Every structure is written in structure tokens, then in C-alpha cells.
Image (cartoon, rainbow, N blue to C red):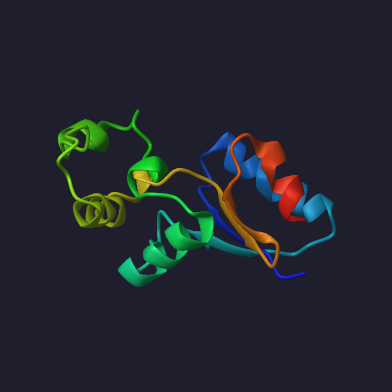
Length: 115
């Protein structure tokens, strides 16, 4: 089974999901999206695969959320995506992709439905 995880090494949930994937005997493709954020096209594809709006994928407790005025409901999807790509800490994590689908695995047990 092919598994991709958009991972943040300082996030306890992301670390736990990565461990759960490996405990299932799977060696996933790990993308440290803080160092290598997705392209605009990749982000669009992730959102479509997860059936999510850009706003739904935002981490609203990050400083960049307010500093970029993302609480402003008039911000367009494009503006939100651009902010997430400029400040990847704004992207909710971890995102796991398998042939069964793609999800933000929060809580961590959501990954079980993808394995």
C-alpha cells in the first residue's frame, strides 16, 4: 500500500500518526511540508481529494492566522491558499493519502480508516 503523509516533525499528532502507519508495517512517503510546502496545484489537489475548503484546512490558533487577517471572511480561497503556502504552519496536519482516500488525521485514529 502506498501512503503519503504531509508531516510536521514538531507536532505530536503528526508524530503519532506516522508511528501508527509504520506500526502497520507501511513505510510511507514522508513530506515535511514545513520545509517543502506543496505547490498551489498540489494544494488544490489535496483540497479536492479531502473535499475541503481552504478555510476548513486552516490552523486558526497560529500567529500567522491573525497577522495575515485570515479571520476576515471576505478573504478568497486563493488568498487563503497563498497564505498557507507562504506560512505552511497554517496548514492543518497531518494529511494522509492512500488509495482509500485523503484526510486530515485529527484525531489520530482517523488514519485507521485509510490503512
